[in-house]
Amino acid sequence: MQRRVLIAVFPGFQLLDMAGPADVFSTADLFLAGDGYRVEVGALRAGPVAAHNGITVNAAALGEVTGPIDTLLVAGGLSMPEQLTGGELAGAVTRLAGAARRVASVCNGAFLLAEAGLLDHRRATTHWLAADELSRRYEHVEVDADPLYIEDGNVWTSAGVLSGVDLALAMVARDHGHDLARDVARGLVVYLHRPGGQSQFSTPMGAMTPRSEPLRELQAYIDANPAADLSVPALAARAGMSERHFSRVFTEQTGLPPGRYVERSRADTARRLLEVTGHPLATVARESGLGTPETLYRVFHRHWRISPGDHRRRFRAKES
Image 1 (cartoon, rainbow, N blue to C red):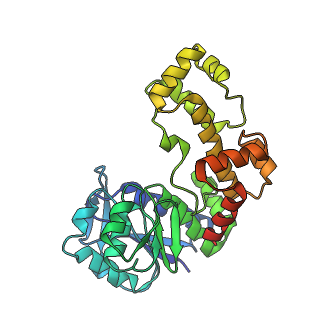
Image 2: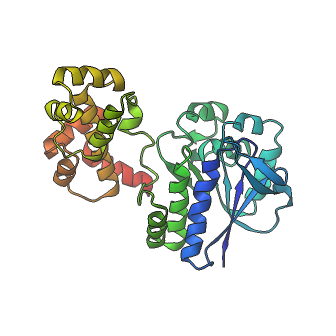
Image 3: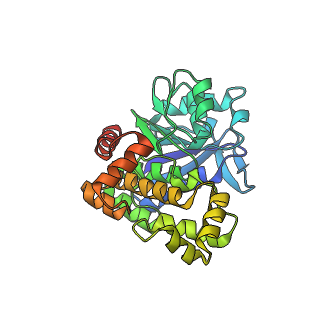
């Protein structure tokens, strides 16, 4: 029997918050030959609802939705502050949550769950830009701005925009097993495994994007090839610049000297390997470009004040 997924939207919602999870669930339904999920979209008023980018979707009236719901998912969007006034949408979410097996939000959709009281005394996440405001406004919510998504009881929350895809894949894995979630991810050509405890933040997000296209390509090369020769002479040659000029321009356009950027990128790769693989530390050090477990330990401690082994243990404890 199909699981009913109701996605609540509003004028000015973020289209990807709805479309990403909707495509995950509908693709899973294709693999399950129509015995997986049925996706519906609802809003306060029936009819076309315009997303922030101007694209419209047709929605049913939330007040007319009846019957059991498997998953109630609330989208986010830049117009969220307007949706919190008056309490009408939060009231609709409260009513529907009572008929749902689980409730979820994408991005700052968490504000509507909090306004409805559904996050009280729960751990929750949202887009990192909105986390401080969520914590300030709702003192009974334990806000954690770092993870991609969090499951606390039957309430799930996720970080910004495309983390809704990770959230939906995790739900598919929970409902039908990891093999199906993997097949869906492959079908959608998205990352196969981004666990909820993985950080929203990464080295590319912590550095500026270069204005120069060759330097943007070089930045992408560094992040994709951590075990390559990423010394200043090698990178300068790849960029077609002298070492001195390359170091000056790279620092100016990214905000980080080349050596520091490379170390942070390798440290970030090592952290992901510790989170999603069971590789021994020697393998993690080699594949991340850090070389030896001793270097891995020094770099990890310098960036996060924790040992690689402790990070892996804490991450897995958080995931479980």
